[in-house]
Length: 142
Length: 64
Image 1 (cartoon, rainbow over the protein chains, first blue to last red):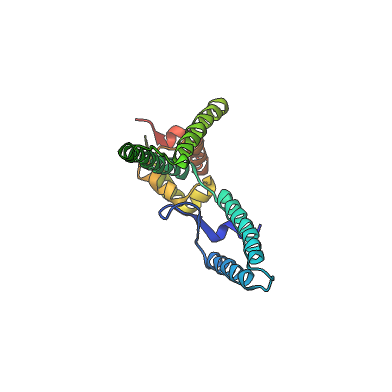
Image 2 (cartoon, rainbow over the protein chains, first blue to last red; image 1 turned 90 degrees about the vertical axis):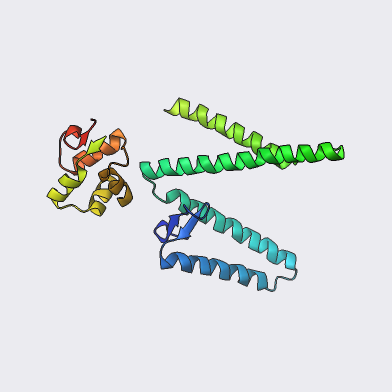
């Protein structure tokens, strides 16, 4: 779309997504930031309009970054490393979420009202469903 | 699984970068293979064998 995959590399040590690997990648980021600032300062009547315009631009930028990310090549060894790193990251996230459920339950027992954040429960259920779906898909495919 | 990728590659005068581009993998993967730190898939082993102008996988890879 806008950015080229040659300008970026896949993030490995600083989270997820892409990071610039060439000067063109840094220019891309600078231009994106510049456009955000420009849109925010455009005389569109209401500040809400600027926010809406920026939200639309954000969707375009996110779509472009995702497209770049999926086009970045990854060989079999890199895929294996990525899969193991993602698995380990998931285990840490799951552990924290489950500890969070126990913590909130414990706090609830003290106060007499158990309130568990539904986002935590949805995240755990969502991950379980995705894991099962991935297994079903892979069993059929390979 | 051991291999003699480095010896064959050097005898052919091919760099790690060149072999990586011939087989469609990263240079780091070639390095890991040469240091026997990574066992390739059958397809990659086949592609490497072909790129190194050998006809049989056993000429490059040794299952021990």
